[in-house]
Image 1 (cartoon, rainbow, N blue to C red):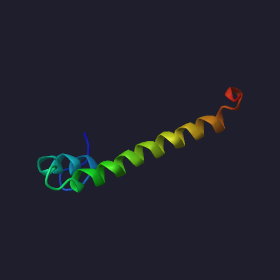
Image 2 (image 1 turned 60 degrees about the vertical axis):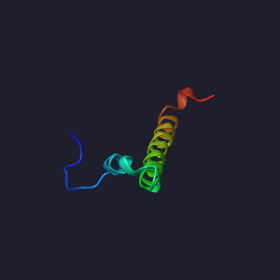
Image 3 (image 1 turned 180 degrees about the horizontal axis):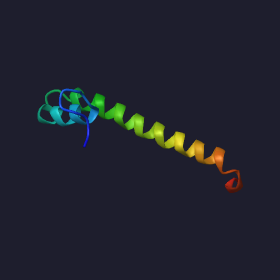
Image 4 (image 1 turned 90 degrees about the horizontal axis):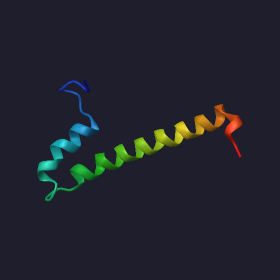
Length: 59
């Protein structure tokens, strides 16, 4: 399960940068920040879709 070996992924970039995190923190911070932003965006989009499709639950 997951992305095949030759293809990069944000999780793989974070895992590979973990060994040198104290000397080069941007190797973990940059992909981690993008992954965090993606998860927040998907959650907000899901909330907006739920509000748009279920008008009976609005106050």
